[in-house]
Image (cartoon, rainbow over all chains, first blue to last red; front, side, top):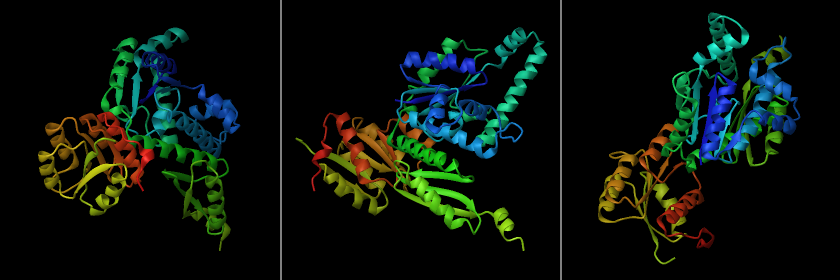
Length: 274
Length: 134
């Protein structure tokens, strides 16, 4: 009845182990194929979604921050929607960064830099030193991306419940270790953790809806109530509150919306230059 | 139902017991309320309850200590933790030690009724929540 989220510096390894674990546990799979559903449900180009998972916003890459945040929020909303169904192995998505504080979610990090160095050197016909540098660059990029997107360093082992070094542990053994660990009672769902997950799911749905047309949005949910924190100039304040209440109030499961507006000093200054 | 479910409810905030007792009475539970954990533990020593519902943060003795006491004395009893200071680490610790369920305050009385119903089911004395007495 639990959820396993697997992440690694190698997509191939992530998928291999996730498939092994899902097969042994008879759990449902939640992988990168989900992006096709996100693209369809939110009418977003799937290429843009994949790009958002790889790069940080940049006007040069045609990925403005506003769109980037919105794309990520749509992925989050869809992932949470699936995680509510339980008994899931999730990989290939940044769920390990945004599914936080849920006791029945076990997060696993697989390390495999050592074996990847040899493979990359062989595949690309480059020296081991060069392959090491490529992997170090990749990790730096992932760290940069995860900090920009979720203010968490995905390469930091302390973010995970279980870290397995595949340079030392055979993949089959790793899968067995994961399936044994998820049996610990501490990873079993309870009323509190289920409630936390459904609150995060509701907040993610509202966030995705609001970020479609707005920026500077933070959403928290508890039961059916939602609190939205945003920024607006004095002139825009009332209009923005009304718009948020209307959009969020339309989301299934929302019965109350509270909006807190912080001053947007830059907009205020622009509107009242003297 | 042949026998009412014996429930001990421990919370140092009097309002919690006052609010929850009637809600549990409605599903046929026989509820004893305590605000002092020392007195609750003394009562637990005297009587085997089916279910103990306890707060975590209390003076003199915390909810986990109450749980350890219940577990030693009456292994069959199901313990449910209610707390206003819920955190993932605490929830995991409580589950690992063997509590039946964990719920964050504030919650609706019906949320606790649902948990009690599951505990009753696990004890082999199911209760029917559709038959709530007015």
